[in-house]
Image (cartoon, chains in turn purple, orange):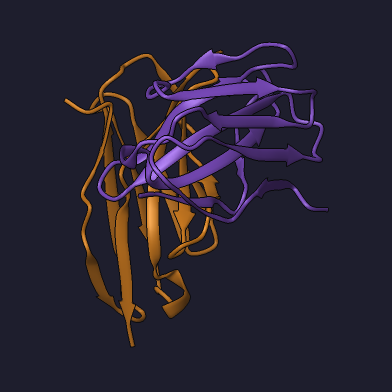
Length: 115
Length: 110
């Protein structure tokens, strides 16, 4: 049982380049999330998707776009990367807000460096 | 004021000791509370949910104090493997968004 799988694990980009982070879960979860983690800032929510076909902005959405491709997959796209987007990105999923305890399962993380 | 605040530490504690962390939250409407554990360069993993009546899981005890708006985590008989960063997480009922604290770093010293 893989849980949450995200790719790539590492990526180096030049300023202005674009890329997509991929995330897939095999737990039949309704909700999926993208977080970024920076030193001293904790985990900050970029975008989330409460169900297939819906997406909503989190705390720090600027510079990012997302697609909930189907129930399993939720991708994060950087259209024009900036050095401020250097971070560790985590994808997560959960059964959803009406499941009782909204427990998150995280992927292993993607380390992105923008030069 | 931050939505969720934690003492960043580091807490350096000898093996076998008891250590406690607190986490304060600002939104009195918060309904769900969790402690996650994050090892260095790894993803966060759920340690335990925090219930109104408090709950215990082996050496770990979590408490919720709604009047003062904080949750606590107590670790008894600490092990070297307890060294990690502990993240406090708070959410509103019926809301997908969970807010993370910046974490408390714990190092257990042999």
